[in-house]
Length: 163
Length: 163
Figure 1 (cartoon, rainbow over the protein chains, first blue to last red):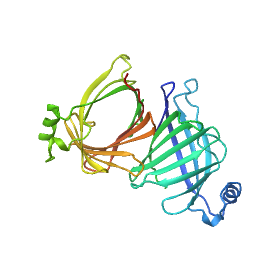
Figure 2 (tube, rainbow over the protein chains, first blue to last red):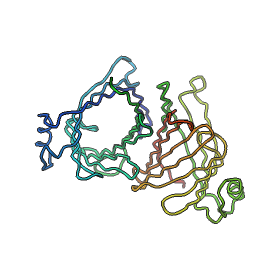
Figure 3 (spheres, helix red, strand yellow):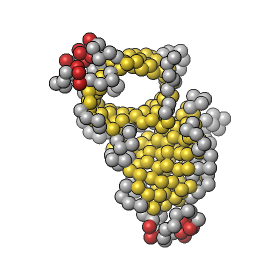
């Protein structure tokens, strides 16, 4: 369950989506490509726990076509610097569709904080587990020029273990 | 702007609300009463920056009466233990209406985390500023017996300075 808040227009968007997470192999050619084309100067061996994420979402913003489902897929490649922080490469960005490079860190209570500088915007995402199988995810999108906050979003995610 | 996620029923609630925050005087009789009737064994002098919060909210869950506005008011009394953590007394609780005693702490990045044990449930709230005048607030409500997560909510709050 994901809610978007568009602050300037006070508009809500409510989205139901399914997210599928699948481990990727460290020797996957797409990982090599993502690293090579990134600004990071690292070997593939620096990668830890890469995975693919696919999603399909149904938004209440498409009342003309209630069955409209948007979907996508993305390769996510963490490159830790140490136990507390690192880089994260994505084949598809969150705020903009181009490949994205993010910095991540863990807060003292385990909250994962991801910051991504896009061409037009800066996104900050936070992920924290509230029980073993429920996690929350928030995002804040601001203009890269100033500190204007464009929109926020919040997702409550329930884990379904694959059989 | 506040969104509620009811996890078991996959229901969204979208709420527009105005929150007003007014400093209270340390010698306010209501503060004395709240402290005396609490489990804390402290003097009123231990209180820091008490305030009153009043709100009026319009929810999309009342389609029969779109002008229905719920409102309320609450006295909030922080009693710091040190710079990082402390107690917080409320004349009206968040998850249940009775007066509530919470524990708070600040994470390394300044995120405020508030935990309240109610009779039937445990609430965890988080507040963090994403710019000088925009803050986010999340809450998670779980059963006090187990770790079942009942509902979550997320608010994007824009500060309007009083003139």
